[in-house]
Image 1 (cartoon, rainbow, N blue to C red):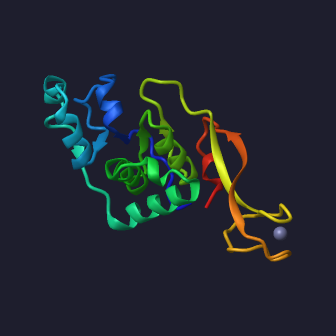
Image 2 (cartoon, rainbow, N blue to C red):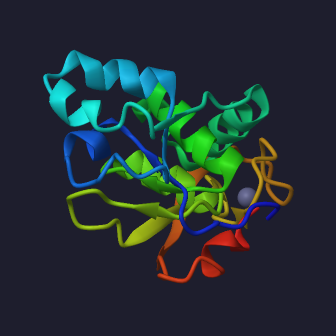
Length: 177
Ligand SMILES: [Zn+2]
């Protein structure tokens, strides 16, 4: 993986900001414009005031967004993610930050991309689903969706191979890709 998590950079998604657990007067936090827009719909302007001069607002580049979309397609999370969600994950990927979110799909996609993801207020996601492709005929497992089975010619279907524990150390999270 080209990215390593650099300690001290954190992308906060909407749920993380709404948890009000973070001292936004610190300059270690990053959001996108779309996250900020979502948050401003809520009534926490006083909490946001303390972030005025310190919060880093960056929108991710197209390449990072595309990589997140591809990963979400692969894990099957794509339909559960809003554009704001995708941008938050993409920003964390782009700047090598830890993503703070309570959203399981965002956490799942982050993990397959080697992004460190932490929960803001609920229990951390303990495992990640790894999707592979299974032949509907002979049951053979494929890493890539080749369309049909090389052996018997039947169609392949999305199949959760196994789940694994997410380790605290981020070296383990970068084994995919
Ligand atoms: Zn087969």
